[in-house]
Length: 416
Image 1 (tube, helix red, strand yellow):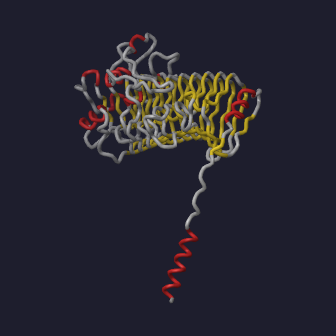
Image 2 (image 1 turned 135 degrees about the vertical axis):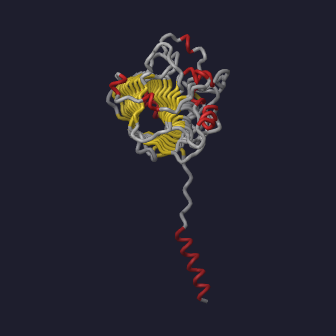
Image 3 (image 1 turned 180 degrees about the vertical axis):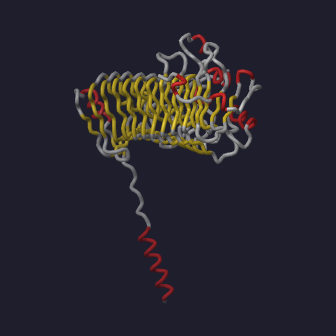
């Protein structure tokens, strides 16, 4: 009898501690009403997004507005989804605006880019969660958060996941702050492309293919410079590269903490680079990227503003394909991994040249024929593993001597 009572008691306790089944998500439509609010909005209006899950079938757009706030009830409470999108590429698009604030909601599953802002002076993206709900896939859109051709940009406390190009991105923009965000399961976690006066700090970039990218690419409307990257945690960016072939980010080796490509006046300091399998920081010229991707073509299904490898980049007379004036100092590097990735030619090369010791910092070693002083300074307090690939000479002069890149401070580089 006591045994039976014990069994009954156990069953009661088990039933009591079992969670009730979750209610199915109820999707609602506010598409027409919300688009009408976007069209009719007047200066200084605040558009309040309700709590709930809302499905959209076409791009939700706002054009030519000033001093507008679009505010949800929280990134976990106001969910806007384009899973069933039938028209347009973007989810939400803001164009030709001034002083626009977007905050406290989620955008999901657009056919192309989840949230795009272009030609806007003064844009704040705050506590926006932008994801592809099924996780990382090549078929996902390119950019989760995508300001381009903007001025005075602030992105803070946002989350980006699942982008087949870059999660938190800024392109061809001026005066940018990217701070206190999280980016994971993207090809590139955070990317600044052809932008100037950029600060990237306080972010977490993890489980991407590459954690943080600072790129300058040819053939665009403007070129970048003067970027500071500091106080970030850049860890375990070892996810497979799922970008479409031919796209510029398809060249990133899995296991890359940070990559600086063909840009200048960059300062990288006080960051934690941890357990990035292949390399902590890579300094790369466009010549190397073009050589590694020769013959690759963009897939026809590419949507949005993704940049492909331009093998005719030398035709751009204003473009400098080489990184210079780069100051790297006071970072912390740790890596529990013994082998770089074998999914990429650079990874295979590093595995062969630095067996059991993936490098903390790599420089491709391709000289700029127009510049005798490369202006690359490395001043780390701890002992690091460094490789100068000498890629211009088929790696014949590969060197691990970091002393040739030593300097006292940024003044040596004349950073702007």
